[in-house]
Image (cartoon, rainbow, N blue to C red; front, side, top):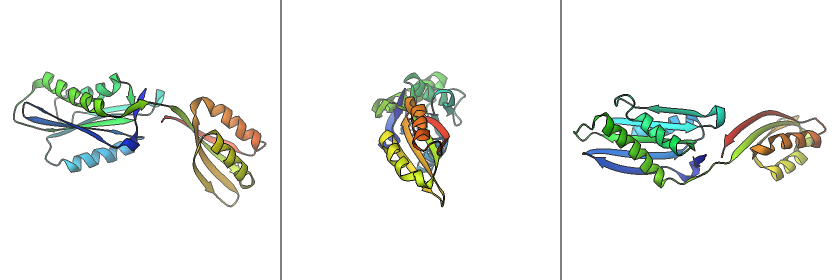
Length: 206
């Protein structure tokens, strides 16, 4: 599985086919909410476009979500070919929009499929794809007197994403390799003599 790192920023490719302009933009996303923001930005930036077609994949395994839209093009001629470009390369956590400015020449269903699919593949050719790493994000609740030693150990085992203190407790969120989630959970219990608890585990690709 490959991903497009959100930190790399958007990648853009433009193609002209029989006077129609196809502008493809690929970006890494972590959630459907991030995709909605991205799509809104593209739509606002291209007010004269006839169509803003798109596809995205986000998540992993059984939680993988894949969606696409033809945005007014004949059914199945735009969104599905864009999605096929992502799926054929096994790219997750990525979105592609293809904006079309109509040039006055109809392409027909086959021509549209080739144009949208080709635009999506062209922008992916330029995108900095890399192998995905499966991780587990653990949410840990612990008593306040265990916070110091627990945080130190978690920094050694993974990446501490956040630490939130209340008067009597602390909540830590740590990301570790997916293969280590049970091991880290056991280490937390052992270190705190059962006083701390892993209250949530979410798996994702990073």
